Length: 139
Image (cartoon, rainbow, N blue to C red; front, side, top):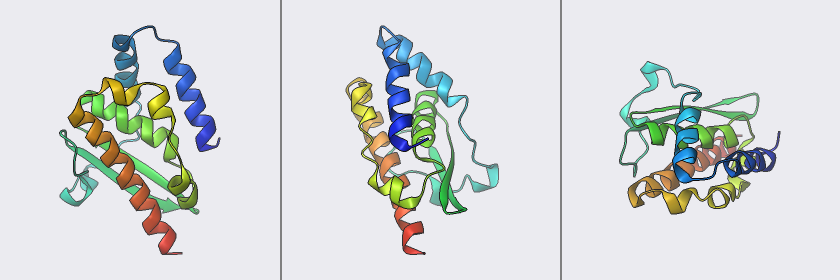
């Protein structure tokens, strides 16, 4: 499935909910399906800077595709990183770098996050794209 197809799927999921409490609940549930980073990879250099919560993000290049794993000590943030991994993981560096990620606006996520969580989301996206760029430059 392409990044855009996954984004559309997420927009449709979030449209099923009437209010933001239900959407937050969905986000928290998504966090429970997060591809977890292994404990030995929860190191300082993998913490996303700019997040109020602690978020560890790991990436690996497997068969030409970037695979992300992560964890967070906050349930909403865990859901946010799970959402981003669902969209970007298992894609090529170029696909990740070129991803517009318009679904974030379409589901209203940026308007309903606190400024610090919103900054954290931007930092997550930035780090995932930087990782993809690093893998691209190693080719």
